[in-house]
Image (cartoon, rainbow, N blue to C red):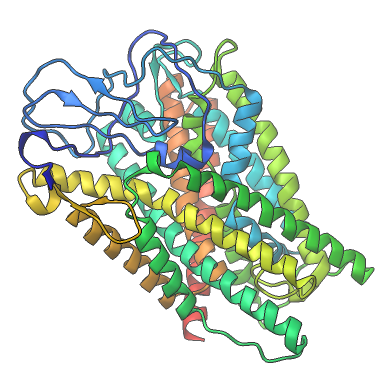
Length: 528
């Protein structure tokens, strides 16, 4: 048995490691499946000793020794901008690696709702809104690319290696805390959405096998609750993995699975159109009983599309992998534009082929709504890929929350044995492992809470719409625009200021409307 209490405990807090030194050689090979966590996770130690352990989970843990200095108190999100946690490494990223990272990060479970969104919007508005969101994402990404270096966007000595670092540098501690609220809410919400989606996919496998054996007209009804509980049980076990350094393999598998099921959904939709020998759907989309109902569905569809696009929280992490020259911002802007164009083409194919195949009967989730019955084994495989992706994806979104909360408790209660002690256990047939009481209790409670919320609101499209609408404007628009103003020293009421403020306000209005529509849809689904 060992103890992490007293003077020597190590506390993973949300710390800022943007450097202020001159150009340093770093090696960046970039694992995008970890990038979301990298935008939030840094691990310092604090106490009367002066050793800070900064864990940057890219390829390995890195240890930084800081000069002897007594530190009695640290703020909740410490700024260690003067610490360089990585020495003697060289950045090797190129435009091609950056494009691959972006595409891997953007394409996920949200792609499965795009056919339904297109069906609500129709043949004109559906593809058009996807293109509009693609354009907005490109503009937002280009603004954020200029915030990587400071004060000069091309050769400034200070690097912002994560989204939170940039907000801290340009906007200050107050805005950093506000940004953190939206980030953690977004991460928690995505964990809830993944519980919902995984249960739907397991249920779809059961139904697919039932339909294959009993016929397409058979009554193959299964509940969601048992599958959510099973997924939650798996996550309670997987969540005991200490951090991303110990679960890189899981993230790699998750990324591969997302490509598999997305491609299968696209292929099945295309095959269905050929089988039908017609293109279904209409200009105005699915009809509703009243105009108000139609408006709500349209707004919800906009929220679903908003969920599928932005990747701002990982953009600076990807940019930090790039070698120079050319300047990182130029490479990143080209990579972002190219990757979003490719992603948009893929999204348009998934959305449009799905709508063309099923018309007004387009399911909310392309692979679980049972427009496809055969080949049943391919439908089963696609849904199995979704489940495997979500097992890893749940951890990608949850590990940063774990690190922050557990770090805060260690900082707040440095002498608590419950918080800092660990116990070595050995069970039959498995290797010995260390058990931390706080980790076991908090992470189990976290998983249980996401599972319970998913059981209360098991509505795939509505939940995605709420998450997309709620987080799109602050994380993809507001903070990038505001940081750009500071970086470029753009004065109030100048032409560029007016244009970007108008752009931001327009996106805010769309986000509010989409949020209202998605919340209304969630309420109606719950009480209908």
